[in-house]
Image (cartoon, rainbow, N blue to C red; front, side, top):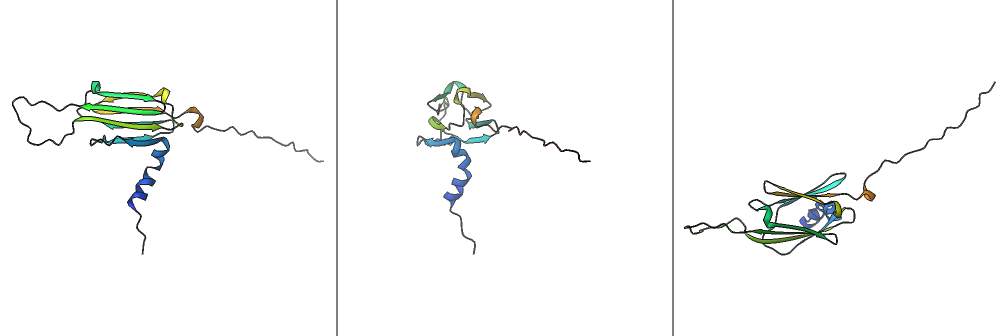
Length: 145
């Protein structure tokens, strides 16, 4: 009979590569930002899904290898109307990612388009794959008569 794999073990194995580059922490906020992390050979990209948020309401800082995201999504005002149900999250959200030494936070770039904040972190030069040159020596072969 096949042995069941605990969900925690499966989740841990799925995020093992992610965790090598980041120590994930959330501030306990009820509003969790959907996040994709994509690793390329020369960089890591993080996409934060922030629909309905103005770029002016996003605060992104990096200090001591810690990436801090603070987002404020104000509740829309409905003049003359009463909200009966609210499913869209509003308020503040804070998220921290601790950056690995394998990433170069000094070269971090961020862009915001159509509700997606994209943070790009280059892989540090010291850990990028590099081609190793191989020298070949040839032994002389003497001709025999």
